[in-house]
Length: 79
Image (cartoon, rainbow, N blue to C red):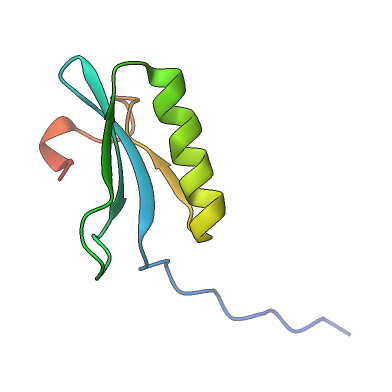
């Protein structure tokens, strides 16, 4: 007897904690912006930005999204 296949889960449509380069700095923010206002920080050091992104992701229970790798998205698609 074949086990029943579970229906596919819908794509995640909620917010992410995002890290991305912004000139010589690194931006960490929640996207889309929560109702309480912008959660945005800029860091000169990627490791500090990465640590803050992970702390926010764990603290808020949101998935992280790393946009520092140019191979993930074309720069024109980043918003």
